[in-house]
Image (cartoon, rainbow, N blue to C red; front, top):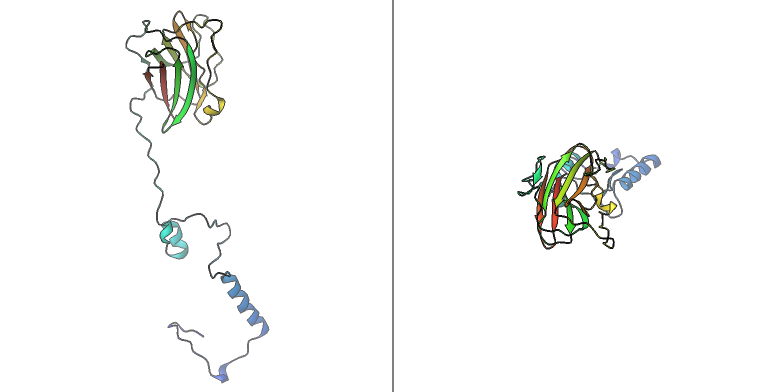
Length: 229
């Protein structure tokens, strides 16, 4: 047997006792349970051997951590959303008529770190004149009717000068439903034609009002609305 110094002492013959069958079987079973065929410790119940354990979590179990688990992941910081607010946004010349935007071509929605981007594209090439602001209800200009736009809160999007589509004009494309999943945007229909030169549309958002900012692009004409997530 082993003492605490690791020296193997063999008792004299007079003190040796033959092992009973039960004791021998218990020793063999204990050795088999403690080791696998490769000599490594089996993972315990519910343990995933592919998951790395951080040093703080593994120290309580084994007193040390392997070098492969010493590195911890660093979360990606959310970028500063400079220029975002809940305030009404409009171009300097609003509401005067500006360069001709043509008609609406499509609306797109895309996810970015910290915000969701809605892009309205037109067939013209100039920078849009615009106004974007929160409204209590999506009320349609001209008729005064409340539009059926999904969402809990709404951003009204207005642009000048948007032409009236002809009978053969293609219908603009709305964002694909799959592109709205997880964005907090319930609806963002495309802008198409204008009432007395002003095009109107609504962005429906789920939950509360969120800060936003507006920019424009040219060639082709685009209005970009970024909404904080």
